[in-house]
Each structure stands twice: as C-alpha cells, then as structure tokens.
Image (cartoon, rainbow, N blue to C red; front, top):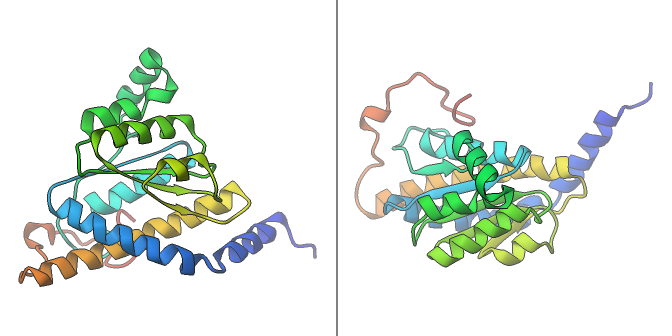
Length: 217
C-alpha cells in the first residue's frame, strides 16, 4: 500500500519540529513575561494576520480574553481582522495595505504590543502596520516563516519558523501560540506571587469549561 501525501505532510511537520523548541522557547518565554507585565499594567495586545494567519491571530486573542487552561481574569487583546465592517471600509476607502495600520492608529497606544503573523514575512499590510506601531511607540513582535524576511527586519523581535511549506509554518505558529499562552499564564502567576496576592479568580471561576487544552474548545 502506497503512503499518501498526508504522510509526507506529517513527515515535513516532524522534521520542522526538530529543534523548534530550542529556538522558539527563549523567544516565547521573553514574550510571555513581557506580555504579562504590559497587560497586567493596563496595556493591550493587538494582533493581525492574513488568511490562515488571521485565524491564528484570533486564536491567540481568544485565549487571552477567555482562558488558556486555568481560570484567570481576562486581558485586553484584539484581532484587527475580526471587525469586518472596519476592515472592508478601510480597504474600500484607503486600500488593502491600510486595513491594519489604520486600526493600529485608532486603538494602539505607547506601551501596547502589536503582534504580526505571516508565513512569508512579506505581507505589505503588515509591514505598513508595523511602521505605524513604531510611530506610536508600540512594541512590534513578528511570527513568520524562514528568515530573513522583511517583517522580521521591521519588528522589534521575531520568531522565524524554519520550514519550507507555508502549511507547516502555520502549524508551528499554532504551537508557538500555545507556548506563548502557557508562558503568559505562568508569568501572571509569578507576578501575583511577587506582589503577594493570589491570582484573581472571583467571578471568572464560573463556567464548567475544559480545564486543559486551548480555551473555547
């Protein structure tokens, strides 16, 4: 029996996973700690991507506004593509390249974080958004495919996934998203311990939802 292309896909993923933890973990730990500090102090996370990367962006913000594993307070995180009325109006009036930058200008403030996801690292609308975020004094993180790429160069920090196929890059982006959520939650707990308080739960400990795995099912 011949093995199908699905097996080849799995082989590609397994190959890309080799070494991923070693180069991804330090970046994710750095981001998780910084994000816990920023969001805990009242800043917000803005996230943007196109196509499958838009889905990854929304996955991340859902975990922060909802929960990843254990119950905790919600944190401010917005997926910029999710407001379809705004994105289509901006695309119609200003052009597709401005759909994220204009929202960054509207919602972003100095001290906020803009996270940009792109398998190619060359999406023009993300590059324009990065420039606008820099103008506002925001911190820009990029989650991309192989380096070097333009978005890596435009960001303050980047995690560049070493994989040949865009599908494999996206799959490892999801791994990175979950690693980031875990790092964020642990950093929130450490921050609470240092400040001598328990991680606030209160009225957020209400639902019978899953206690393991990603939030929202």
